[in-house]
Image (tube, rainbow, N blue to C red; front, top):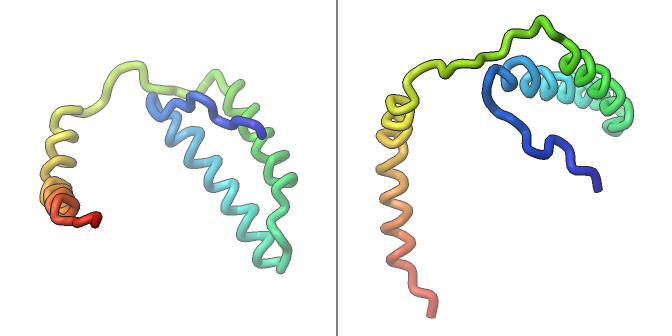
Length: 100
């Protein structure tokens, strides 16, 4: 099989300028086929996706970030605070399991 998006980059604006629009394109083709009562035409989507990808790749006007934005430590703290209770509960439950 083909490896698509090997070593994909999830930063510098690529999520908003590449990945989100490509997912939107996928769902556009998927929903259109479903609305028309057809199976998903992957080849048709791949052709449209390739055109999009080539346009994106050659768009030298796109502005992608070269400097960090936001406070990474603050984001990490917020994520920790949001999920620590659930993580502790899960770990506690796992240590109570008996595998006999």
